[in-house]
Length: 274
Ligand code: 13P
Ligand code: ZN
Image (tube, rainbow, N blue to C red):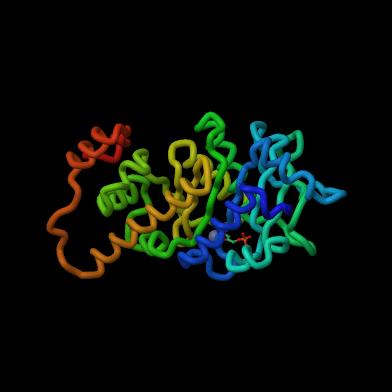
């Protein structure tokens, strides 16, 4: 047995590989965090370092994440290297009792640190945990190519992106009936972008960072990866249609969107329908 046999660690590493294989993680692009369950912590604890590292203040704070443990990708680390070299690429951090600092208890070997987007992940975890009665456990940031490209040609509104994505693949309104949030271009890696994104995540399961990428959330790795995959696939279809240069002769009408929502038993965000 090793820590790499623990289910949540296996699932975390697999998701990193899946994202790499999709082409969403050039160089060190993207990051992933998982809020561990009590049983995950128990299973991993025997492999924790004898001495945890120093507490580091995050610049953001959340009461509802005090004392939690997260698996996180490392800053500057490549998703491509997570599977062959996990000890240098990922780690586990503990959050202090004030909910404002982390310390490394396993992994991130030889001086590595959690992702520079840890403040955004942390605040997104906080709001998604509250919004889902504790169900949400995964926050995933990827540089999804077609989603990023759309932020150059569509108005940067939640409504424009939600409608374009819903209309480009019939399953979309079922997978994200509330739509998606859009964050204007901001400097990555700090408290400001963390607060702006977490405001959006109060309403949405996913948020788009203009000219940068996508944030997706979910209760487990499958659902979260599936959400990112669905959004990116829809954006790809939209691009293929635009790229023909032909006029759009038909799309999924608002009445059709309502009919999908009715039959699949989901509540569509009416603000985005005409
Ligand atoms: P990290 O290498 O610090 O995770 O940053 C990558 C990234 O995508 C920043 O938005
Ligand atoms: Zn990024």
